[in-house]
Image 1 (cartoon, rainbow, N blue to C red):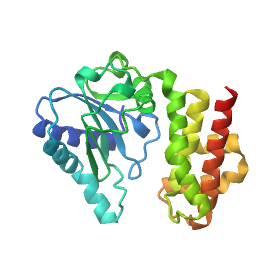
Image 2 (cartoon, rainbow, N blue to C red):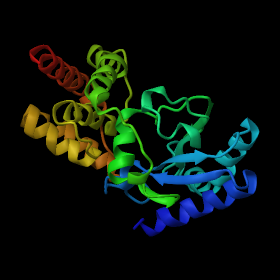
Image 3 (cartoon, rainbow, N blue to C red):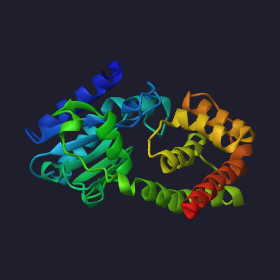
Length: 264
């Protein structure tokens, strides 16, 4: 069952999709925090994977992103919130590509926040495909277990290590050196989520990542985790004094993950 707010939002979005792309959205699956049981009203986005029959005209995709998210965008404008919580974000793939190994699928397009991308979609990756297969919610179409998905479990660990080595290393180094002077407190939950998947092969929510971080890396990071969770709850957080700590924590997570990779 979907939370009532999620059901309403996806219903509005699909109603717009069916007007702009009649008969083309053959499947619509909710993933992300909703599928992981960690969705929060007025704080979380609604992530999806859509299966498309036929083409996906760029102008129609842009119109769908704008019109399908009018309610969330209106709330964000009234609250002066650039993150647009409640946005229905996701990627579109061709129905004929459903059974392909996920890293070989080229999305038709995607949108997230204010951004629309054509022929690209970060969400089409081993982590999201695992969540889709294991706990995705079918709003339209067969249950995920019947889709013949290939999340490439053998590549899951290396894919997460690649994310830590790339994007997250740069972010951590910028914070630790002081060259990055502003950051979203909730982002510090990203590296321990990836680390957990590297170690266990399972995907956890951001909230669960905070507990995992303390269990794995020690209580000295508790102020950082408290700040991240408070931000997730919509509470004001004084994060400037924790920026360097966030960078150091991120680099420690990466180093520990790398050490496991070397041993293995």
